[in-house]
Image 1 (cartoon, one colour):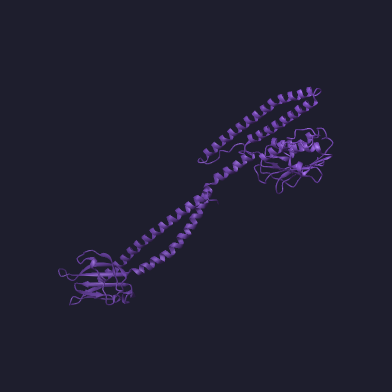
Image 2 (cartoon, rainbow, N blue to C red):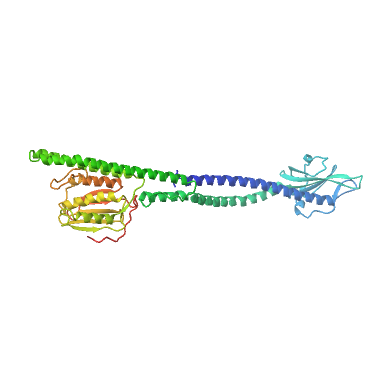
Length: 462
């Protein structure tokens, strides 16, 4: 995909937002986990503090005692990560795990009547979370105030947190991939109306459809309506241009006919002047025809280019040329695939192919051959068995020069054919035919605006 691809931009934006959301979600889940671990630890420590408070007693000298050890072996292991201690005034009772150290509970306050939770330094210098519960024991009226503290090393909580992160990070990465893929599919689906619109525009461009259909989502329908209005405007402009070209052609016919009549009248008195007038009239007619052909092709524009089948047009032209002088005596060989399509309108193809075939009719001795191909680069070849042309004469084809004055014509037919062909995206080349005469090759790119196709079957020779 290119840099300016809308799908690429949306995909990257979606991936970035998904990544940001998952990072924030991971941070939030980690914070929640810390809160949950702390709350659960405090709850367990408070429950242990209550258990110790139920087993604590006082010796005659006021020293606190514990009737039975707690079952968790970490209390009996030096620096085991789980600690307890009982304060009774200046007397102190503590677990073996504290060894010769004690917990600093000064932040909990000495006169507090409710349980307190605090972070303090453990016996090995690490941080511990502690629950301090005030307890009073003894006969009513002579109670002794105690403080029971139970603490757990935060490193054990960090180990649980790390285990959670080791599971969370791969899960978030997998979720990122799944969500990105889902978002890519969503973007692909969301842009599908534009792919349909492109296909419909290609159909309009190829002449298979006159207007765009209306079955598009509401967000795309205004664009479709604007495009249809543009097509309507282009159609009206095309009609106006063709009408103007026809009017111009009719307007030029009368003056040229007058000049031709004057040339014939002047002929007996001044043959040279008559020939010059006739030649200039023919040149003017040729130039007018070429200009009108260009105007007709330009009026069609590039927005909507129709295609047409080649075989029927070629067959009609051959049938017409057979009726012209020297046409009925020629052998016309026609081999064009039925599915071969020219990337232009039928009138344009008739103008191009008609000029090529008429030129072949004038110069052929006995045979004219028209072949078409749809493999590789589609195209047509028009060949004759006439005298042929030199390389320099071939180089001058299409410029309006007449290379032989023995045949009638203005010399603009081939130039018009080349102009019309190039306007449709086709290419017209000339060379020597294996039959000895001139070979004209009309070709166009495969999959061009007319979407030409071809099958190996050939139309029967005429």
